[in-house]
Image (tube, rainbow, N blue to C red; front, side):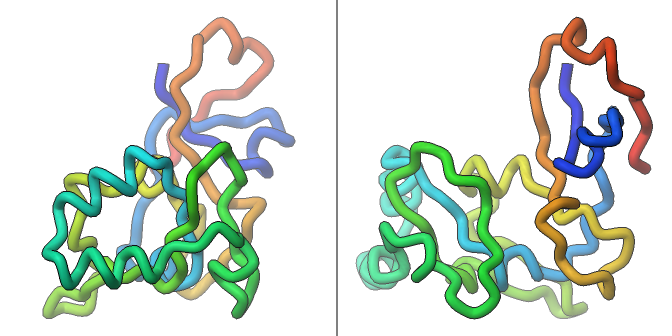
Length: 150
């Protein structure tokens, strides 16, 4: 079963059965560095031109504090190879001002499962409200309230 949950919602015993709304404001790409596995780094690098690949490698760091020294927004630490520094070099904008990812079809796993959890684009980012998509055995949810996030 696929669910969506934040640290805050889990503490309250609530998980969601549908993904939250994405405002496409780009704040996650501007302010939150992303951890990458070795496989993700290789997959992205193959997709890039030699010039883009050089810039991509320059934007990787092993030091999470170097990844976003401005305001310290970090994703959870897993066993990853490196961090892609914020702001993300793959962030672009549509003509109507919406955020767009240059590598969306091959984006990293953390980008695929992450939602900022805000109720409006004006609400500040809050790590306790970050929502992640999780695949889980439904039997493990017996003590949780299931809600539709939409």
